[in-house]
Length: 374
Ligand SMILES: Cc1cc2nc3c(=O)[nH]c(=O)nc-3n(C[C@H](O)[C@H](O)[C@H](O)COP(=O)(O)OP(=O)(O)OC[C@H]3O[C@@H](n4cnc5c(N)ncnc54)[C@H](O)[C@@H]3O)c2cc1C
Figure 1 (tube, protein in one colour):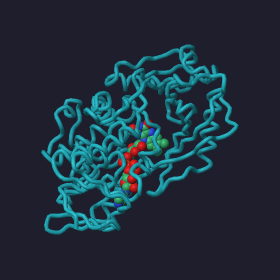
Figure 2: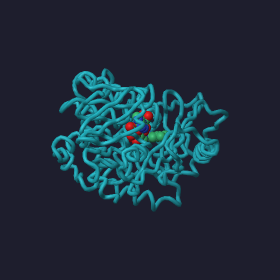
Figure 3: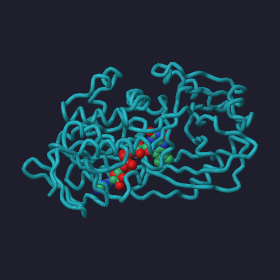
Figure 4: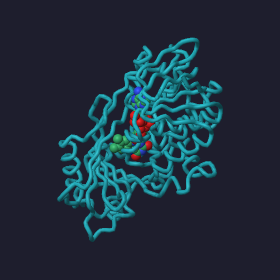
């Protein structure tokens, strides 16, 4: 039996970042069922940092993560974690009311957003059809995230702080005895007084192992494909272009164009695979809005974005099960909010309160706590 102060289940971005922060205060072991951390949702994202995405709690968590992305701790990464990639929310004539409501909502936290005319929008993304676009709103300071560098930085520095990641270590049983959680895995038994449930789409299943009540997590499949850009177009500086009702988005991705139909199909936790209908929808929607043609799909994949009822992440002690901490429901924002949520996790476990800079952003424990869902 290996003992530590904090056991973390899941070595995706949530588990890796929380383990890194906790390792400053005690010994940490991360249990990962796969042989590679990042195999599931973390390795399948669109890698975007958008201050204007999600509800107001999510947007505050994203803003609170900004400093870590721009100035990570010394030696954390050799590459910048962010590179410029503005986000352009586009609207047809019939979507102009939705665009106005969106602009009004996000301007309060992100005053740099700007309304653009149809002509200006077409200058920025010349492949958009003139008849399709009536106006847009741009978030000029949105960014691409180097997800691999972020994830590897957390895992490397976790090990430097004395932490350990056990791979091929699916937790198959979890029990509480003498104020300790005991986890059984094919890689051995592990125990700690505190367990952090960062198992992504499997968070409710992990709770079930210990008889802890679920939080109503719903994993939802999201599909992405890449296509070749037309040879005559330089796409490298195109923004992330999103339909204001989030029916599709596209962006440059390593010389290709990543397109998603922004699907949200409920799914059991699994190794997600794209459905051909969603791949077809991605092609149909991008061809409807742009002059791009899609003779063939280069790559296609899907991942599970997991949500609870209010679409807000769940960060907090269970309240009913001693030492059982939830870090779940990251939805479509788990990469961009990871630094703030990891710091919230460590602070709530170690000192019982959110860090001051998070409360200064208007974040409250009650908005993140699992109790709100019960
Ligand atoms: C197409 C797509 C686009 C996205 N775009 C963005 C974006 O632009 N920006 C953004 O911020 N977010 C984005 N997201 C969302 C983001 O990827 C997720 O919020 C984030 O990766 C969730 O991380 P996680 O660590 O919670 O989950 P995961 O990466 O799935 O990690 C959970 C881990 O737990 C492990 N596990 C589960 N059960 C057990 C067990 N019993 N024992 C041991 N290990 C276990 C799993 O193997 C897995 O490795 C996108 C997602 C998708 C699918």
